[in-house]
Length: 279
Ligand code: PAF
Image 1 (cartoon, rainbow, N blue to C red):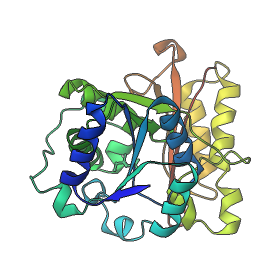
Image 2 (tube, protein in one colour):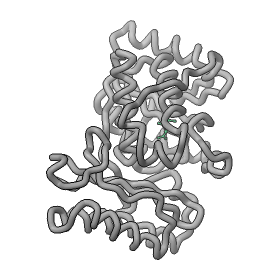
Image 3 (spheres, rainbow, N blue to C red):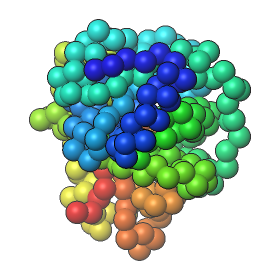
Image 4 (cartoon, helix red, strand yellow):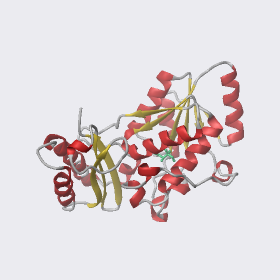
C-alpha cells in the first residue's frame, strides 16, 4: 500500500492511473477502522481497479471540541487492517494541505439538513460536505463508498454530487453489525465491555418498531422507544421518517419507505443507528 500525505502527490499518481483507463474507488474515513470500513474497501476493490482510502479527522464536522479530542486514533492498527484487504493507496493529508483553499461551508441541504444529526450537531453536515467536496476534487474517483449507518450523511453526499454535477457514483453500503445487533462504529472503541451488550438495546428497539409496523402509530412507537432508552442511555432522538426526504411521518400512509433513526449517549459515547422498517 502506498501512502500519500499531499493532495498534489496523490492527484498526479491518480492522473497516471486514469491515463491507462484504470478505475478508482474511494473510501473516506476518519480512521479507527473496523470491519464496516473493511467491507467498504472490499466492495470498492471488487468494483474498481484501484482503491484509495483516506484517513483524516475532519475538524470542520465536529461541533463539540471534546468530541474531536476523544475521537479514537489508531493509525498503526489502521494501516495493518488496510493492508490485510489489499487497499492500494492511503491518503493522509494535513489540515493545511486539504484546506489550503478556504472551504465553502455554505450549503442549502433542504429537508435533508433539518432534523436528526443536523439538529443535534449544528454545522456537522456543512463540515462533511466541505471535506467530501474537497476529496472529490482532488481524487476524482469513479465511485465513492459510504456506510448506511450514517444514512443522513449518505443522503447529503448524494445531494452534493448532484449539485456539483460530479461524475463520481456514490455507493451506499449496508450497515455491518456485531452478532448482538450493535452497528459497527469507530466510537465503539470507547465503549466499556459491559456497555457493549447494553448498546445492543438500540438495535432491539429498532427491530421492535419493525415488528410493530401498522400495529401502532409512528408517534406511539417513537415515544415508547425513547422512554425505554432513557433507562440506560441519554437519548437525543428516536424518530421515524420518510427515507428519501428524511421528513418525520405522522402516519404510515405518509410514506412507502419508513425508516427509523436513533441517536443516544451511552455514558460518554454517542451512538447513532437507523434501519428500514420494510424489507
Ligand atoms: O463517516 C465518516 O467517517 C466521515 O463523516 C467522513 C465521510 C469520512 C467525512 O469526514
